[in-house]
Image (cartoon, rainbow, N blue to C red; front, side, top):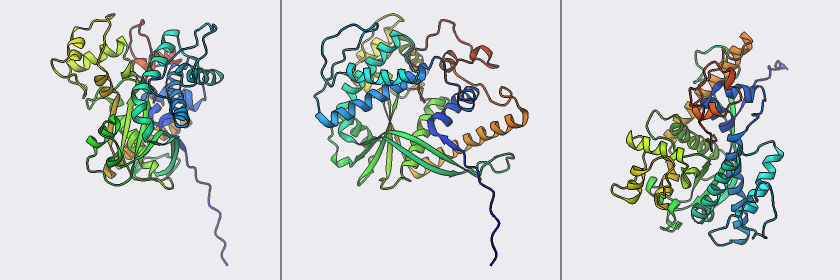
Length: 391
């Protein structure tokens, strides 16, 4: 009998969809310092805001499933510094937020300022009260872990020094819904949005929902964040359909929470996008929303209608086999880029020469390494990062 020689162990790198791939696309050098060196940010603004929103919305859903408290839910925040406050009901967003804040604080994650904390509570409360009545009844599971393995050989063809032939990709889906279009009431905004995006969907299917602690990005083809949101949904769908007992995924919903309570910076960005035809959700000509946006100046109050804010907060991405393949190829290429950087650094022994610094204004303003970055984004020194996008 011939005994086969033992094979050399094969390296299969592990990548998180948001923690690795999207972070690398935002800024390769910042990703290297945080992930490759395991250096936590000293001012984790982006981490705190995004994780606070996710934590409060998950806690709200868990509470709703057990007691179904009626909407709207109140929000009585614990003041800073803490002072005695009147007793609160269990579904008070202030109660939910206290638990999430304590958890994040134990991890060294705190809000940048009182202003940012107040904004986070306002947006979480608005999301619960304006999206919860439509979203919560559709949820099948929350915080669903997904994992799969992808082949790198096509993406890495002809490229030397790639250490692996495949890689493991994992992530956490915020919400998975199990629905049929016929079973969703017509007054359900999310159901109607899915019905309009995929009118031919039949039978039981799933829809992936992902919370974004950011505003709706520009929808022009040059917008990297717009494309990456699409790729994220497609890749989550690809991963989800490889899990046991998963149904076909026909669409994904991105919920841009900051659109429910936009800041002055967000309104200014929206006005620029409207002027440049760079956004897909515009106010009806002659409407009160159109008038307010046209007349708005920094420092002025604005009261956009709930319908317009919800339209900007909800983005449905149709999922097909072709769109999943295209998104998967984009992330395969991203993994190849990361692997090339890893190999180049190992050979040269130098970080900054082998990882690209391409952060935008928000990323650079919140970055601990901007003071010695070889390619910092030029920005106004007074620029404030109120609630930057979390991947």
